[in-house]
Image (tube, rainbow, N blue to C red):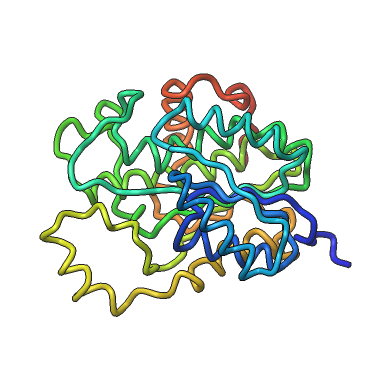
Length: 288
């Protein structure tokens, strides 16, 4: 028996109704994990959980519903998770989306940044004590190579000026990588690791929000180079299950900007102000 064995461990997967999230849920359930799948649409989420349980031949698959564009919904999800499980061994931050035009959430935040970054930040912070109590535990954040094109303008995080789908998406993915690294530093010594990954150019429906004119180009130019969702999910599963990664934290595939610790701290502080205080606001161990 290895020191880290996913069998019997509780895993929460967000964005689990299709694509990477669904396939990761199936693979984790097949390996004996207790999987809680999170989706936005109640009917689709229930159907995805039924599908995953059947494909994995597992009775340990359940689901909860959350709209990650709403901070109130994320807080309600955290309470529902606490009511459902008494431990959390792995949190997979995977929910995400894009929008062809700028839109604001009910909280008044640009939607791509709100869902793709602040959703991860808030849910992770709300569940941190449960993760620490369950240590050793793992936080896996699905980022993207698109972070290499990302920028951060703290005077205009929501693109009131110069919005585009790709700029907003790239910014949110840069935030994912910075968050992963800063979280790893703040969790040092707790037994909870924080790592992120680029799953590859995966054939999912995340680009359903792209403009109509762009969709044929995506189909013609990029679709032949996409990989199957199962292959992208395998990278998530590796970070969640590999015994060799026990204790490994701060693992990111990062562009130079994403390695900027001062920038990561500044983003953390800005994110905390946008969602409310984080339990880790006063805890950080600097590393050389």
